[in-house]
Image (cartoon, rainbow, N blue to C red):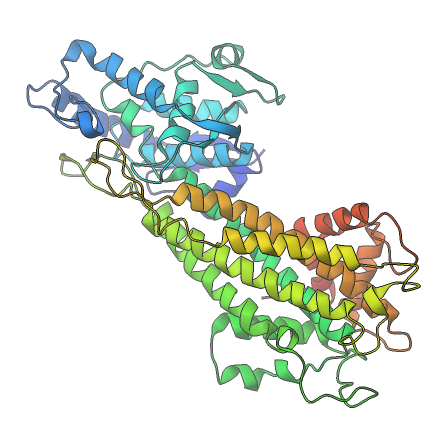
Length: 512
């Protein structure tokens, strides 16, 4: 099994995906253990002094003015975890919890939090045992970290609350830890706070969304190319010289992808045949401009994610010169903005794909295709309701594109009077990404059928390979009406797991 070694300088995007989705093992480097021990010495020295230090010998948030005696500090750290583990609603996905735990461990290992090495080892042991704390949908405002979600993870480290075992069964955390030989952690000064005060949930969901959207944007270029062929459109608008005079990188990449996909097509360029037209509709002609703008948004979001991966987010932090200082680095605004931005881009990509699908089904705009791509229109309804489903998905995506990051609701007796709502932005983005995969699957399903209905005209080798792979995956082609939901589900899986991109790239080579 793949092993990820966590040092003091952070981890990579591929490390996060390997642990969250691939179940990779986690180890601490010797450098990280030494940094943990050194930072802990600083915290212990401060704890021994009579002067109050936030997070070490004081209360938290609006209660930070109270100095806590040494005899109460273990109880203080335990209590912050218990009281902050106040999430509600359905459980969030296992991969999100694993990303959350791993990213918190990454920050702990930076040597900026003052957590003891044994606590970090216990965090790694939890991941390696496949124990996943029960974390709920609601509880984070995206400021002072993802407090409630991280608290539920810390609660499991303490041997309290519930967690899911590697067998998928939810059981008391104490029993699961005992079965795997993991001793519950007794938290000391600052450790409870350090386990809760990070942007790790937001960041983990951003990283996974970026990975999924990378596949979906390539998929969108493929489905757009298939629709262009099915509508007998022109590929002249994809010429590199046209995109060079508006040099947005994403636009150029998307146009290049579509041009490669359409190379050798016998379906393009029939504008002056039986139904002459000067230009294709915007949803066809402007596909690279819309998908390209989304690609550039991905590039910006990826830069933000990489910066956050290189960060040590905690409050207070242990600085290299030995100072322990309060700060506001836990504020989720940088992540919240791009999470919202990605939801906007995804909604627009879904919207233009739905417009192409609708055009394929409308006999007045499809340039010779049967109504709704039906076998015997009137007796058969064809793909009429598949487009209804697609429209419903796009409508929800538009609602999900309303930004969460422009909202703020004060908390902690006005001490935390401006919050990012980044967790909410991340949660709605996950739904938007799921919906986008479904929207593209419906366009793929319709465009593939439409291409096959163009008798006597030959699609490009790449798009032909896509249609063939789709059929080999068990997704049916043209014919009389049948139970459509299983076909659409199979098409969704074909898009989501990357087989669509793989089929195209077998002919074109790597798409951009």
